[in-house]
Length: 84
Image (tube, rainbow, N blue to C red; front, side, top):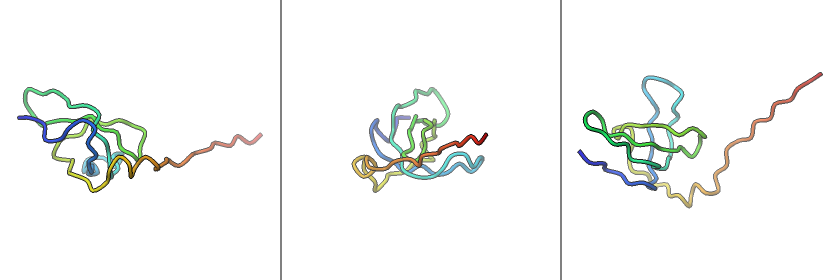
């Protein structure tokens, strides 16, 4: 079975039904994972998260978003304040 999507393509990632740590939203394909059997896997970088993830092809779908749409997107800044 071959990969349906290509490196650099922007896709919509579904949230994980098993954990709530994987948010849904647009992501970019970074790497096509090789496989002998089992699901087709991709390494992706969500635009709203700093963590790269390995995602099954079944959890990805084509997106209306483009890379140019996401270039201006910035993650919220978290500041820790230490009080003495």
